[in-house]
Length: 319
Image 1: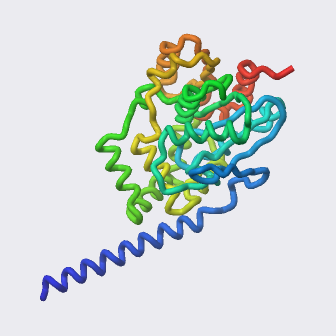
Image 2: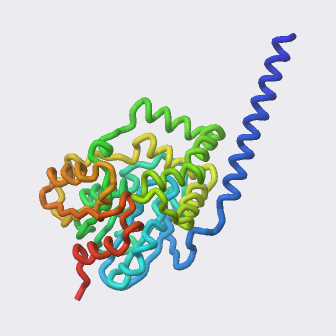
Image 3: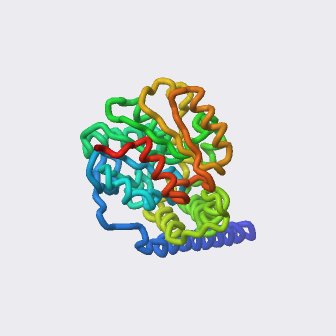
């Protein structure tokens, strides 16, 4: 009888704990949407795996801007450069599937999924050959999309692309277990909410993203936080896919196949950026590169004018 009572007590405590965690998760989801992410001038592309939120502005040759695959990121990453680029180009910015205001289906996100998204978007929405600027891990997507269909792409600019060693990482036993844990309905959601809490994002901003640890951009931070929690329970699935290495794809045998013009911009204070540039240029000697001083992972946010100056060199103003 005592054993039965203990089991009942444990079950009651467990149920209460899980219920409390579920309530906490729900509160975080409901209170994170402050309407910070821009809504004006947004359009929708109804793709087969979900609706993609995007913007289009300017006139001239089409140019796609791809944000990095970071928790909470969105096309807000390009806010400091969008207006000036649109003076000369028709600029498209996308919230990739699983990010920002785009749909966040409960699926495993892969590199090939995003390659198909970019390919279909160009064919269905743009309808002509386009230039592209990709940030961070999205550089992998841009390269693979170009390899998939070279007729859709012209010039390619990469901003702090991943080291080749990172692109070579594939789902293994450990990463699959991490993904499985994060995908759990209640506990996994709590872990995700801790990993993308405002405090955690602040640490990333000061230690990983910007050269100046004291750099403060509250609007950008709040945008990241809101984006990371929009979609409630489903918001975590892109993060678990990244942790599980499902968004990676080895570039070692692909870079040499591309004959498009490629230009890499790196933040001078980004860890191992010189080694990364050397890796890429060894595989494809035609790749050109520049470093922007006093910047780290987001040189286009931290030093927008220097970034735009390099864009004008690589994407010369149409006459």
